[in-house]
Length: 245
Ligand code: 1GP
Image 1: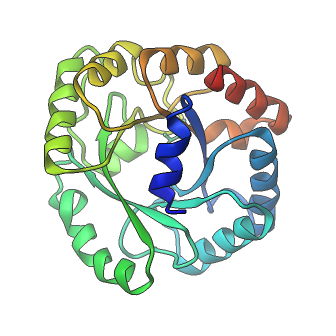
Image 2 (image 1 turned 180 degrees about the vertical axis):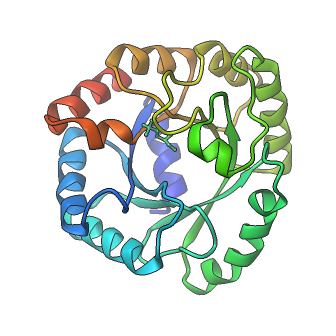
């Protein structure tokens, strides 16, 4: 099954969870072990990415280790065209629509597209919007971050993405953000758009996760909690049951 069909099929039954693994944070075999726990906890997919200086070899061995240990779809969350692994099941073919750097909007994508075709990786067309505070990705991406109290700005970008024909919208508060994307923004976007909404950045607690899915998020992404939790399985199960309820 195509990864996009898998996402659509699963979100029909309610919101889902995806786990973000940063290849820079641990050796491949540890990433593989984490992936196994992630799968057992009920997460729906593994995203790999998030680092600025990643080299392809390191990325490849992490992806292979994850694929070895789980059957979950592995989706590349790319930083640049320079590090794309042919071992993933799909790649977010994403444009940071509120970046002031044209490379982040379309330049890297033009560079990466021929490789994606050659390697036959499934592209998942996605609009990526950075919401205040944006953290490292907002800075590196030179984003004009969407202020937390301006949900209508997120709606307008989202509508533009939908009219461009993009299939997913990702609202990103930034990895490690002190608090996630505001629920009011999620509500506003969901009431005006009909493409699936992914939300990530700063989600640590079950209560937050519950609030975000109640506001309308279709997919919640967590990364930092994977790295921080000593009791990974318990933490993940708690978050996922809050999302799936
Ligand atoms: C980053 O949204 C993701 O792109 C995950 O953020 O690391 O804060 O969970 P966290």
